[in-house]
Length: 197
Image (cartoon, rainbow, N blue to C red):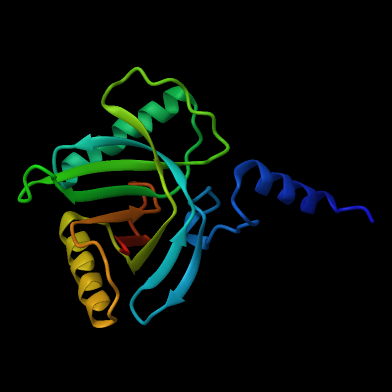
């Protein structure tokens, strides 16, 4: 029996990228590649997802202020344009407590990069490639522009809901994912991510 061309492509794609299945990106990826995940469970105000390992390009930013986040965004955007790396979704801001000082924060901005892309050599020490291992993540969706204030508000709401649901999570860090260009002002899809423990 002959295997149809689209199924052959799917099988080759799975084998080469070790994704474990043909995955259709959700609508909010807008036709771009996104990190592969499986929805483990859906609750009233959040989803429990299992993300496959994924690769990212990242840079540190000074704070969670909107101006600092935008500076980091444009730095990575222009780097990717220069290196001709295809854009994907989402852009993620990560916030974690500094190891040496629990009162300060470490803030980074990261762009997801397709596993099919061979990354060029880095010469800028402020930009790094990072591979995130597979992980269980709790996700709360919110709309509007992902400002510092509404990002923190949605992270805090997610924490309250996780506690109420009896879900163990890492309260020392969180991520906020955005799926639209900064030029898009309406119908935005944002997500607050907290990692399970």
